Length: 335
Image (cartoon, rainbow, N blue to C red; front, side):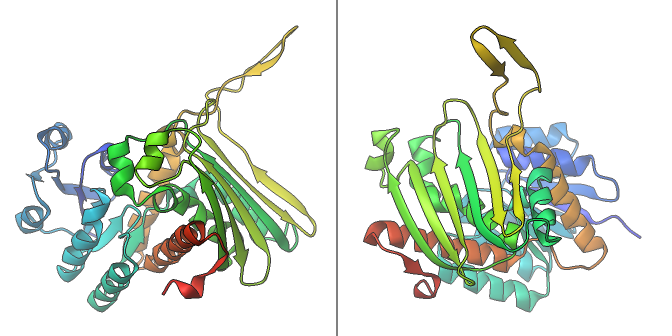
């Protein structure tokens, strides 16, 4: 069997992670890469990528490609996915597919008609801690799930220039938690009630966003999830999940820099959590790309598909509407 030919579009932080991981995988070959900046193209040269382009269209014409990993800015995702699908190329795309629900629906229709596979980069599904929670819930270890609790706090806010183009906290940051909320209990969200505030940086408020939030989700069966977010946790990257059910509870806690504990007359001291997402989810990034490649090899459904991205976007848009109107919002109101 011939090795599938991969390309990577966008060589920023995530693109470099994906390119490095794919280059280490057996059974695939990276034949092309694209980045509008010279620094990104030089990174690809250092990885000995045969074909390197400065724009997406150019890359598509340089050499045959079986699958593309899209890691470019959010506002390019939908167009790149559309072009790849029309060229008959399978796609892995970082979240979100687009900030417009109408555009996402349009692109998903194009993908379906083209008959190519599309996977969205909700990497937390591939983290071993979150996966363990999912598996224990699925096997009935906690009984019938009643409550889901998700804590997601960043170690520091991104630049204002990024926030202004990101779609805001709910579509940039919390969208991962919306996906986890669906994933760990395999339920659909029916209603969203969001509260938020600017407690960290007034500049974030002036940009039209919030930096602190609590979101309550109600599933279609009446059970609930609570998500709390902050753009700045002084102690590092805080990523925890809990599912409480009729027979018990399962928790996934933070990963730490090391496991030491210092005991003295001032208390018990331990290492801080891993600093940010690149460190915390290093293995998850490897796992998701490996699973994408396996879905191509076996002609299986991708483990995260376009509908998963669509549902998380709907929840995010409902959260924005709820925050603005100070009321619970049904998902059916969004589209």
